[in-house]
Image (cartoon, rainbow, N blue to C red; front, side):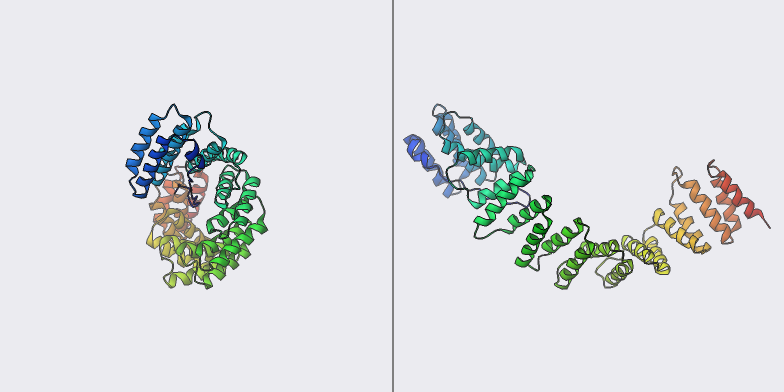
Length: 396
């Protein structure tokens, strides 16, 4: 099997008919010995025999090329694809070979270089093979060609070959349809792509991957309502139950500008134990509640977040909410904690000192307010504001 990410290409190497007609008797006999070693899984011995045969047939072009073809095939069966490529390159560099053999070598070589992610080269090899071969390409071969063209960004050609592969196959693998979907989407044939996504779901309605594909399809088109609908149906079928899936649902509701529903879903899933009650999730819930204009719920969630993990940004955000609501004690406490988490060289240090001093003053902590404000006025840009607050502080 050649490494192709999620795409699986099946490599089938048929013994060339010309080998029996053109190769010398001695070469043919030794190749038959190699086939016996294959049947017994004795691949290292087969490699040794083929390397010796290649060295002995350098003056016989056809024998040399076929020997290297066998050598490459043996390397593939051993799972050592990197050893197949030099053998095929040596065979292709041999002059005077018949078109049939050259075509087979180029098809084989194209399959190898796809595994090395050299898609332009693979496309050229496939094109050369198509120009030479007299046989109708199999669906598997057409799919390989479609994949190479897609990865080399020849969308029109990749679509044509994919459609021919699918039309000619009695059993179309899901991997083919997944590639076809991507070809269609990248070609901006969005309706056709959606139909392929639905075809995949018809095959396996419980497959979470296909529900994600359909939801992603609508998200990429910024059709959030359809994306949410797909996810809701998936959840009712028992699919999409992972933590990342649940968070995605919340995010989509937020994008649909229904933050209250997003917040209630998130809170319920936390309570049910389906989402971990960690600082990150509490912060997300606080953001959702604030977007839903439920400020008390937002503040409660944010305090839960900072109680689990002190974060200066979250604390300052929480302090600003209390500040807007005139809740000076809570605002002071949050600013003071944020300040403690801010390093001496931080660009926001003096700004936070000023805000902490201001809220301390308004919360009735005059001594603490003066200490923070005296530190804050070291910043020349803030000095005017700080002195104005200090004058307010000194009033009887």
